[in-house]
Image 1 (cartoon, one colour):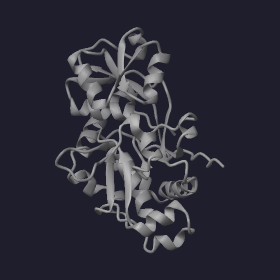
Image 2 (cartoon, rainbow, N blue to C red):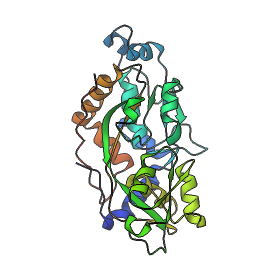
Image 3 (cartoon, rainbow, N blue to C red):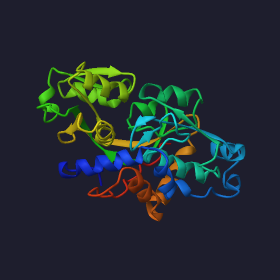
Length: 297
């Protein structure tokens, strides 16, 4: 099932996102945050695999967004980012025998335009950063999952008459450089306007530099919650985004490990707990976990 929210629950969903993004208690309340690392995990992996290497080192670097409330968000006062992407990352980290709440995990800010370069250069070991799975990306890096299905919507000023992407033909619509959102905006007849990150897009909407911004609805709801009374999410979803875990194409063995970890979380309820503690809230239905793609040979 796809993650969707009808208009009647946008306000309560936005509030839930805002609360989860405020740091502090949000991470503490999440059951997935408290998951225990697997003891002697290195013994479970074959020699020469990336999983063995990480488990023996006891350290890992994970690329996440820092500016997407509900998915990946970090303010200056917080040591660990919060959000659904982060909680799913913690499940994978724990399966490697690394304590996801310890300083053995480095959370690296990863914007849309550097996700592939960071994986290719080994600057990060994994990327969970609202990372849509595409055939083009899979030519460059590995992508396992998906662990979330969502869709692209539109964010505009609160007093705007825009009701959806159809009203924005020929208008400037912002999205992060390197994101699939830019391609979808152009396909719908709007003028794709790239920015370094989604925070900049939101500022451009507020300042009137662009007519709207567009990306996954889950991201937009979090931004709207941060700017309550100033911005709103409008329109139906006009794309399907399949969010997955990025890893280096040089370590294809990671795919089966990640998928097995995700499947276990689907079955034991930890995935649902991660969703409910970050993207969930009153009036927001927890979706069924998506079907995982087969790992490529």
